[in-house]
Length: 92
Image (tube, rainbow, N blue to C red):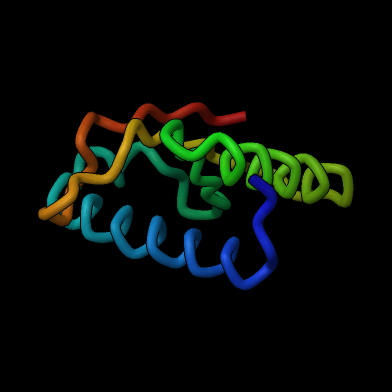
C-alpha cells in the first residue's frame, strides 16, 4: 500500500506521541538517547511506514544529519500507552 503525505504525517504523529509517553514511563530508555539525536521510528508492524521513515533518514544523512537514533517498534498496544514489546535502539 502506498501512503499519501497526510497519512504518513498522521501515522508518525501517533508513533511519536506514543513513544514520548513510553519514554516518560521508562526513563532508562531515554537515558540511552543522546541529547542532540534525531529519532527515527521504525514500526515493524507497518512495513510501508518503516520503509518511508528509513528512506527519509537516509536522505537526511546525505545532507549532513548526524546522531540518528533508530527505534524499532514491534507494535503499539491497542488499549494502553506503551509499546507491546521493548523497543530496540540502534545509534548510527
